[in-house]
Length: 379
Image (tube, rainbow, N blue to C red; front, top):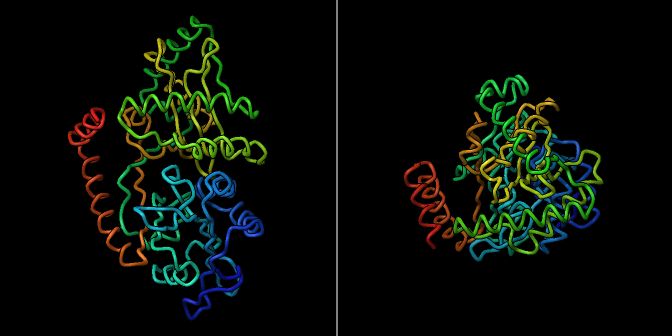
């Protein structure tokens, strides 16, 4: 491991890479650098700090520098992928739409440059796996785009908010939505009245997250999918992140809920970036009000709020679902950067690329995807 000011030279112009342990001093430097700059949710300093605290994974900050001045920063963790020690974004499968902060977005970085630095300072690391990255965010190009090795298999969907909420409704059958909204409100009133809430205290966040974990677990079980929110460190991460976010000036991570008749009926968790709100997760109660679409009711309110903020995009994140399609007119194709650093890793990457291509083929074919989901439920 090298000091933050020492670099692995990579070019005649003095550009180099420094790999720094994510200790408290380094985290403060990263917060100062990344805080005011364009970045993905998982590259927010609070996300990175919270993940390190809850996951137990070892963190590193990979700095791209010229003449001792930071040009970009990659907050990464050591994790296990296919039995190999790998550097990846903090958050595992929950880190979507990744985008590293850069002071000079046009800076070029090569795979060899990154690989050489990691081999020198972290010789035990066999793989660099930086998945689900935005090609651009807020009009800024990703500095890692030239390193792209494949397109991520999972599509992300987003809604353009051009023209505000009125424009969005005009493009997405607004008259029908308005009629349904009135019917939903009447039904919720009959059930005891409805409240849209944004829990802020630790107890409130704990209660809503507890409901979310219960609902999501039941949903995953029904679909035959492993519960992505099941591991204790994942649950503690989201709770700690949402609680800590309340102390941040811009509240980067929030929890929203629809309460009807005193009971939680729909929940979303959101991250708030420079140019968009991102729906990181959501769940609905499966009961007598499910047919009234409480999830759609909450999404309507979240979209309306994003429009009121003047944001150009509402991002539904990874996953191609029918309810998203009713709002969305933008398809986002993320990219992956996968760099093997050992023979074993090169073999693993071959298999990983084949699996990713197969997954993409299946998900792009409605009939194959429908069959795959049916088979999954039978397991």
